[in-house]
Every structure is written in C-alpha cells, then in structure tokens.
Length: 347
Image 1 (cartoon, rainbow, N blue to C red):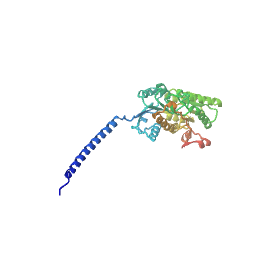
Image 2: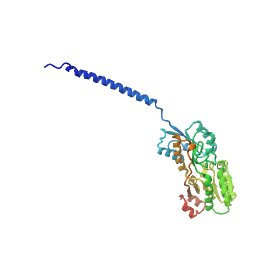
Image 3: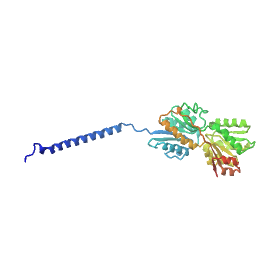
Image 4: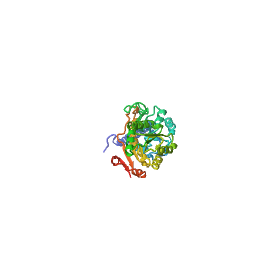
C-alpha cells in the first residue's frame, strides 16, 4: 500500500522543531540568569549601622554581642528582640572611661570622628553635647536633661538628644527624707558630690533647708579625695551619708561601701548597684531597665525619626533596696515600716 505524500518526513520535522525550542529555552534561561545576576549585583548592600556606646565602665566590659556590662547587655538584648542581628544589621563602637570621667571628652570626640549613626550614653552627656550637635544621642539614664541644657523640654527635646531621664534632682529630696527616717536626730548628714552632680547637691540643700536639717558638704574632684571626705564626715560627727556623686563615686562604689561600714555611717545611694557592692540602702530607678528601653529610641532613630521629636521618658517606678548584711555590720536596725515598703531586701 502506498503511503501518503510526506508521511515519512513528519517525525524529522518534529525533531527539528523540538531542537529549536530547546535551544530557545536554554538561551532564554541563560539570559534570565544573567539578568538576575546583574540585578543582584546592582542592588546596594544592606547598611550595617554603627551604634556608639559611651560608658563609665572599662571598654572591655562593653565589647561584643553579649557584653559583660549589665546595662550594655540589656541594650543589645532588647535590640535583638526588635529583630536586629549583631554583625548583620548593626555593630557597636564601645568606649569606656574605666571610672575616669576626664576621659569622656576625648572618647566623645572619637565617636564623632567615626561618624557613628547613633550614640547611647549614661554619664558623659555634657561631653557629647560639646562634641556634636548632629549625631543622635540616646540618653540611658540622663540625670536631668532640661536642667543640664541637653533638651528644651521633656515633651519636645528639640536638639539631637532624646532617651530616658532619671530626674534625679526631683528624687534627691526623697532620698534625704528616707535617710532621715532611717537615722533620725540632729547630727548632720554628710553629702558626697562632685561637679557633675552640682544640681543634685542644690536640690538636697534646698530640701534640707525647708526641714531645718543640717548638712555637711563633701565635694570631691577625683577618686583620690574619697577617703579624705570620709575622714571629714567622721570628724564632723555626721550621723549619715548621702551619696550624690554621679561621675566620680560610682566607679568606686565598692570602696565607698567599705569606708561607710568602717566609719559606721549609714549611707543612702541613688542606684542599686551601690547596694549590690555592699552598700546599705538605695532609692532610684532601675538603670538596667532604662538601658533596655533605650533600644526603642535607637530603633526609631535608625528608622528615620529625629531625636528632637521623640519625647524623653521618665521612670514610673523607683525601687527601694536594703542590704541587711550591711545594716548588721554597723549595728543598725532597719525600721519595720521601711522593710515592709522595700522592693528588695538583700539578706
């Protein structure tokens, strides 16, 4: 039987079309891959933000994604909770004064030269004010930013500073009042302060004048004057000690607690870390929690918010921490009402 014309040539024609289609597909795939590769190359790399940290602690306590400093660690942990990955989204530029406030100015200037994206700091805020008016500064426990000239108001800072304030001048009188409840009597209260806490000394002095309580001013200019201040306090027969030093005393908190115990001086502090170092009693905001909340301000600034438009937060909770071991060492009985209102008791 004869075959239809062209019947034997159909498979060959199909094979030819299949070969052309495969070549077209491979060519299209190659062009697509090249285009995707070119697009990926053209896309800018993700910016890795640099966050400066300026602290009173040694720099070695501030380095890495999990620093030894409880405050810095709280900040970085909160950033992780907000979705930031260390090394991928941000790195830190830590600078620590190692308990020497005279280093703040040079370290602030160094962070400014590095052109970091934002700086988080507790003390050293006046040095940062002198160093830059453009880099955003997040205050982690600013003492009183309006009084210190760092912000126009708490609600609208207006400059490059925002963050959290302890409003320590407002609670200084309360610390004095608690100390007088603990140690009543007519003996003067010695007040340890430095140039960075002048406004605190003034607030305590004003509170004492309204109640006709006697104070003994002990201004120190460096850590070497601390022992002399205690000798002056015992020489004047002071009945108690109120520590208002914001820059100089804190790095020497263990030594101060030891000298207070040796001098039999009941001492009141503004932050709990003095009590953790062996001090008697503290009343103030939780500084670690403040550093944790500072991450929220960093996040907003990195997303484009201007620091001058971010209202400054104030603490809503103040902790009273009492060290019964310290009380026992100076043979002091803590009144029961004070024990009942304490937020934490170290036994």
